[in-house]
Length: 355
Figure 1 (tube, helix red, strand yellow):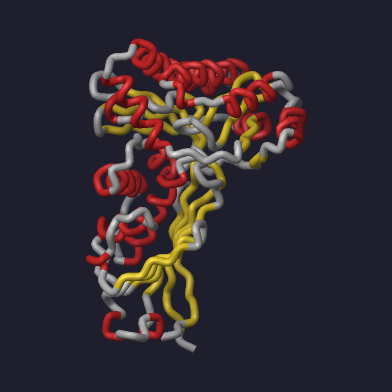
Figure 2 (cartoon, rainbow, N blue to C red):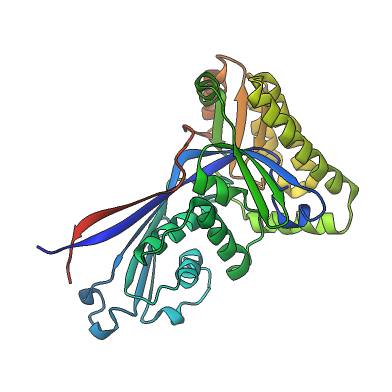
């Protein structure tokens, strides 16, 4: 039986420790933004293969022009006889934009899925975008460096899909690791934090990640915070300044192996996140954070834009099991994770052809 090459890619999501929001362009035009984050071993997966003539039985001649996209997460199929007929309508738009960006002419079958909960605040769309750009470029015979994949994935979100947000998610996904990132306009500098193995293990043991069960649309929150900043609201502008300073302090705490200060800075970061706009938090988030802090968490915050999705806590030594149990008793899903230091991975395999 004839076998054909199949291309697969996976890209990790991220947890943001400090400085989130300050990677967004509007906040980096006059002074640098700073972010501390890490990729984790929760992945977005993409498979790309040639579309066989048997999969376009009505018009086999269109095999090299047609495209089929399947999102396993939403159980959505999108098919088009020609790439140019793909329209942005809310169904698998990220995959459509990636196809256009790479210049694929057709003849492809794409499958996507993610292990992250919907609306998690873990940068899932960015990790999916990085995986899509990586897999599709490999399908076309192009090779991009990880930072180029990050830029391409960021570009399709901002330019083609008009999604508001920064670049930290894309760079964390493409590069992997625990990073300190600097943003000035369109420029990005990423410094991998050289932490000891013992500190990495201690972080993995003492950090607790949970999912509120409530997804959120980060674009809505981004728009509200942008508007508040543009209107010169004092609380918002001061919070942005504070978030930048907290990220630098957090980097120094990690490099100095001062994890108690790191945990307290998580809490400081959250107080300033909330000051950006009321929509960043809600009573459910406040209640969950209080449960965690009353049972041993030194600090905690919402991941990403906030408003729902995932929350992250740093817990006192040997107290994380108590926090985990209390969260689960309150029907809050705890998510196990480790850090990912590889970033995007692209590989080839062979599958039996049905053409």
